[in-house]
Length: 117
Image 1: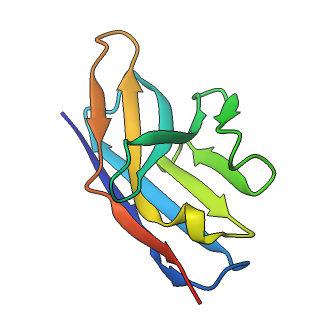
Image 2: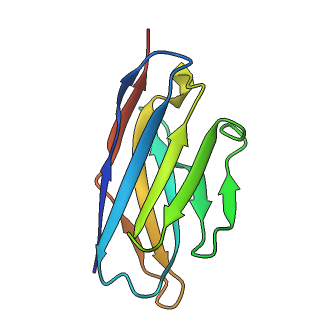
């Protein structure tokens, strides 16, 4: 079992920045892809960004150029640096980890990000 704990959410004004962190613990051997998803009220959960153990990244079009995903494999932690935040970025952000070998998928409990003036 893999346990994911997110931190760093909060309230920020439009144009502001936030940095989310997600620390993984437990049976992390075999975890390759990690990433961030978000779910706004009344909407489906959507991909924000993913990163492989080797550092290959993928972003949703809506966040390209504004968000940066990074990873510290030694600390088993993935980060999401968010800049130029917009009200449409308001959502609960979830950390995700996947084991390609077992196809197991793990989720964090989520952290709220609210962009409002």
